[in-house]
Length: 513
Image (tube, rainbow, N blue to C red):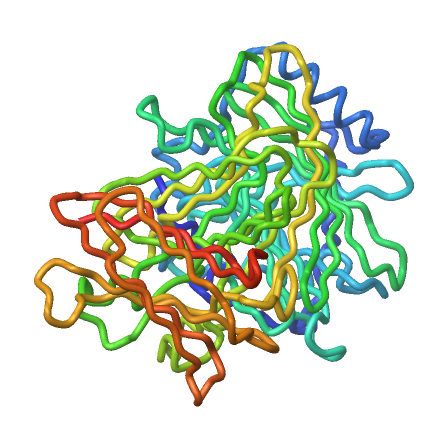
């Protein structure tokens, strides 16, 4: 269910330079053959999309999928990555614009056809599916005659790092998944349009983006506007993404949901990532690398400005955590390990994976940030999900709007947090058969000398707390010694204060035997 989608045909690689065309290609625009039933052009704006989504919500959902006997459905990953888009078929590659779009081939894991449209001056024109714009391996001749009725998504390039090189920074492919990078990043975690019934016994429902409308940007425009139609058994949705690539790439998301039925369990702004191991659970893996993960923690800023850091876990059993708030200011899955030696991985470049931070724009009301952690033994599987679950359920026939911003990059959302937790490790306490020590390191411009440490646990006992400044790094190291006794699970919390005022981030962790 949570198998990692393989984007851009390269597992873990984000920077794909644009190459000039080597031969002439037919332009990627609507096919003018008279037998096409699709309209070649039609007026388009956001209100039209909302009306379309609202109308579809009154009808039964019909999934359109490539059949199992189609050669596209039978491709392996190795077969799929052999298919390459013709260099001259990139949309807007011959125009003086800041963005170029590459349609992605259907097949392999991507079996739901996706329609693409280009919008110019309020008029949408279909980009019909054709195999003529792709190059195939000599053993893939049969794929040229397949009619998938749509692409699997698209990627976008932009000179995000240097002016003379077009790097891929954004991909929409696979259900409602999309992901982006900031400057110097490699692809890591993903976002989704919506989560429904995640980690519920009834099984998760995966909404899909079935059609996109890309507005042609004006020359020198630094933003790209993308509209999408989302469909699933339970609802439809109208989405608009305003994308600005930069040091921290920003995506403004405006969504309107149209429920077909009442939906109690759903997640707004869901993020999906991978955590295998680090210093918290290193002993469980026979691996030369000191850590393997796309993200190492969940960061939240609550309505009262408390900053909470929850290190991620790869549990032995599925676990779900909820962090309640009346009006969350933001949350995100962060990658704080930024040195090569943190991972010692020359291929995956985990130290360059982006963080993703969610900032609500409109009023989401009360609810909770939900964190789902799924056991995994391999880094190819996404096993971490985080999203906002409102208290107010989605009611059938009642549209709901949710607007937010996603920031992707090394330092998203903010730099130089005083009391930022930079690392957490754990291990057996010396001289004890059962006690564990949790080692938490804080960074700051000026660490107060009179900090008080408050360490508590929901079960078991905190039997000792120490702190000291590390001369080599100037970090504050706090060590909390925990004795579980006969308990098998405990919620741990460590906070620092100066003169009864909180300093730094609050550390939370769920320990399990």
